[in-house]
Length: 86
Length: 477
Image (cartoon, rainbow over all chains, first blue to last red; front, side):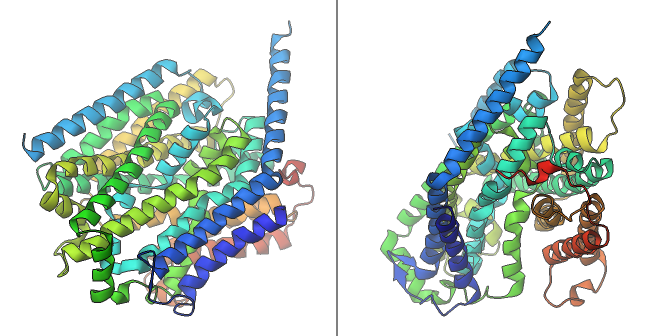
C-alpha cells in the first residue's frame, strides 16, 4: 500500500508536469464541466496526489504517526518522573 | 453610510477583534522561548492547518493572482503546483517533528547544527534564513500598503496602510506564537471564504457560469491553455515547491504540532483548501475578461475596480481579506526571524537563562517589526515580486543540505556548510552580477541557488566524507 500510495502521488505530479511541459498533446482546448480542460486537468492532478496521501495514511503512515506520538508521550512521562524525584 | 466610512468601520471592528484575541493569547502565554516561538508545541490539527495555510499564502494570493489570471489566463494556473508543498511533510516534516520534540529544538538551524555538532552550520542556517525571511516580510508590508491604496480607491494612503499593519502586528508579536497562530486561523479561513464569495459574485455579474465560459471560449480561447508556459523559466519555478517548504517559518510549523498524527492529517486537509483558493482566483480573473474585455490601464488594481464598480461595500471585506492574508504571513515570518537571531546567530554565553532568552526573543521580534515597517514606507515604487522571490528562491540553498542530512551517509558537516554557502553565493551572482543571466541559458535564480548548492554538496562530500555520522540522521520515521 505504501508503494502504491507513493505511485499515485507521483502520478499526480507527472500529470501536472505533462500538462504544462508537453502542451498541447494531452490538453484539447475544450470545456469540462464548464472549466477549460487545462484548468480541470491541473485540479485532477492535484486531486490525484490527494488520493495518494490518503492511501499512504491508511496504508500505514497514520499508524506510524500514532506510534511516534506514543514514543513522544512516553519520553515526556519519563522526563516528568525525573523532575519529580527529590 | 458611504462606502469609505463602511470600509473604516469594518476595518476597525476586524482589527479590534484580532487585537482582543492577541491579548487573550498573551494572558495564556508562558515566559519561555518554547512558548513564545512555538506556542508550547501544542498546536492541534485545525490551528496547524490554519496557520500553515496562512503562512503558505500571502497578500499576493488575494491581490496578485486574480489580475495575473486576467492578464495571462489559464497559463498562470501553474501556481497550483504550490499545493504540493505540504507533501514534503511526509518526507521531512515528521523527521523534523520527531527530533525537535525529543531534543527541544526551536529553529531548523539548531536541529541540523546539532546533528553535526557544528556551530558554524547553525549560524549559516540562521543567516541565510534571515536573508530569506526579512526581505519577504518587507515585501508583504509593501503589498499591504498598496492594497490599502487600491481597495480604498486612494482614500487611505500607502503610508497609512503600512503603519496600520505594523501597529496591528505589535500586539501579536508581543504575545508570541500563540497569538500569531490564533489570528492566523481566523485570517486563513476568512480570506479563503471571502475569495470564494468574491468569485461567486463575479460569476453573477457576468450573467452566470455559462455566459462567463462561453465568452471566454469565444473571445479569448488562446488563454485557456498552457501554450505560453511550456518553457524552462516557468517550469523551473516549480522547484520553488520544496524550496517554499524549507523556508524557516514553514519548517517551524512542523515543530509546533502537538502530534505526528495531526501533521500527517494536515497534508490531507490542505490540498482541497488550496485548490478552492486558486480556482476562486481563476474565476475572478477570467470572469473579469467578460466585464472588462478591452483591458484595464492598471490591471494590478483589478479587485479594487471590480468592487468599486459593482459592489463598493463588499470591497471593504475584500480589503480585510487581503490585509488578513498579508498580516498572517508577516507575523509568522517576523517571529521566525527573531528566533533565528536569538537561537542561531547570537552566541550563547554561560549563565544565559531561559527568561533572558525569552526577553531577547520578544525584544528582537519587535525590533525587526519596527525596522521592516520603516523600510517598507520607502519602497512603494519598487516591484515587490523581487523581494518575494529572494525569499523563496534563496531557500533552495537549504535543500541539498536537508535532503542529504537524512539520506546520504557521506554528507559531512563541511559539505552542509559549504553547500548552503555556495547556494547563497550562486543566488547572489545570478541576482547582482551584470550579464550573468546569459551564462547559463534560461537558468533563473532558483536554478543557480539550487545548482550551486548541489554541486558543493557532492564535491565536498566526496572530498571530505562524513566518517562517523550521528545515528539520529538515519532513524527514519
